[in-house]
Image 1 (cartoon, rainbow, N blue to C red):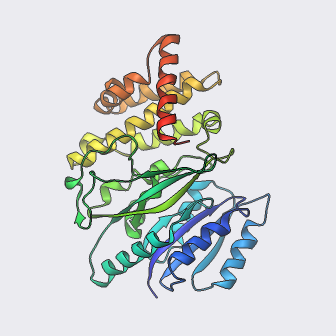
Image 2 (cartoon, rainbow, N blue to C red):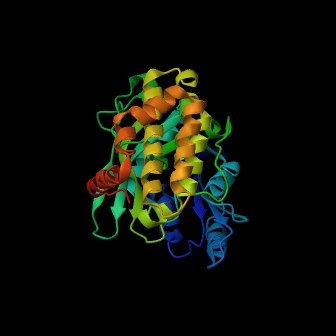
Image 3 (cartoon, rainbow, N blue to C red):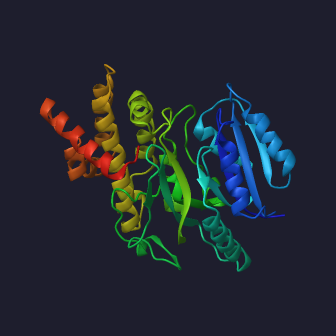
Length: 344
C-alpha cells in the first residue's frame, strides 16, 4: 500500500534512547498501516542499536524497517532513510528526540486529507520545542505572525522570520519527491548537515501548509550533542564545510525568483556565516581564523551581492568586529543571545 508518511530515524549508538523516539511515533499515529518508520543504524560500534532496530521491525513488520549501513554520518543516514522511503511525505526525527502524540495525530490526518483529495502540498511546517534537560523548561518555536494558518499558501504570502524562527529540520515535513528531485547535497562524516536539509530544497517547494501544533520535541542538554557549545567549537571545520555547501547551492539573487523566499534564505545564510565567525573566534585551532577568512573571501568572489548582505549587514558587522576588543564584544553578544534563546 502507499504509505502516507515515512519517518527516517538516523541512529548511531542510540540503544539507550531510541525506543522513546520510536514509541512516540507509533503511539501518535495509532500504529497505522499507512505509516512507515525507517530506523537507520549508521554503523554503531558501542551498543546493540541495529539489533534493537531489528527487534522493532520483527514486532511491527508492516510499519518499521531496520536498515544498516557502514558509518557515514548523520547526512548519509538521512539519505539512506530517504532511499528506503515509501511514503508520500518524509520527516526526519533524530533518535534522541520524540514527537508529541496529539500533534502527530493531527499531522497524519492533514496529510491523509491532502492525499485523498489529490491536493499537492510540497511542504508542511509545524512547531518544535526545545526540551531543556538541565532545568526541565521548554522553549516553543512557532511561526505565528509569519505564516498563514489553516490554508495552503506560497512563499509570496510569508511574513518576516526573526532569528529564532528559522525553518529547521525539526519543523519540516517534505513531500518525498521534492527531496528526491534534485537531491540534498549532504556530505559524509559531517555534523550540522540538517542546515543543508532545511535550506537547499526550499525553492522546489511551491505549495506550503502551516499546521500550528507543537509536534517535534528537541532534546537539549546531553554533553556529547552536536549543538553543545564545546562540541561545536571543536567541529568548526565541519560548520565551515556545511556553510560552503549552502553558499554554492545558489546564487540567491539570480536563482530564487520569489523575493520573500530569497530574503529568508539570505537571512538564514547570513546567520550561518555568523555562526562560523563566532565559533572560529572561540576555537583554539591555529588555522581557525585563516579558514574563516578564506570562506569570506570565497563568498566575495562567488557572489559579491550575497557577500555584501552577509558581511556588511548588522549581523555580519556584529560578529566580525576587529581586534581583541571586537572579539570580546562579539562573544558577549553571542552569550546574551544564548541565554535568551537557550539554543544549545
